[in-house]
Image 1 (cartoon, rainbow, N blue to C red):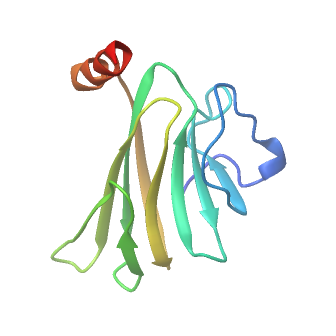
Image 2 (cartoon, helix red, strand yellow):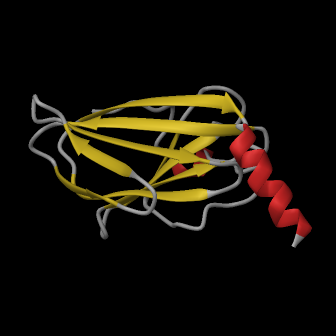
Length: 132
């Protein structure tokens, strides 16, 4: 289950950098351009990460996992269990960054990914970094 345009690593082309996490399966987040956002899964470690290959969007990723999944949040990911038993994981992936997402046994999920204009908060952080 899940959604994505491709799981063939040979069809993946990164335009603005490379993810800092390596995996067996790489799935494009969008049909547009090269895919813009990529879900990277390391099957051996049972870990997921997302890589944002854009310079102009922040990616808001929300994945709802079936209740019988056994997962934990990684990195900046927020994970909460719903009243119906499903797990909802959410993370924001900024331009050219990789965010670790979840680890564990996945048994069904659905994804929602939104490419949004860069927030003022992100722009401020980048300006502060440039001053240092």
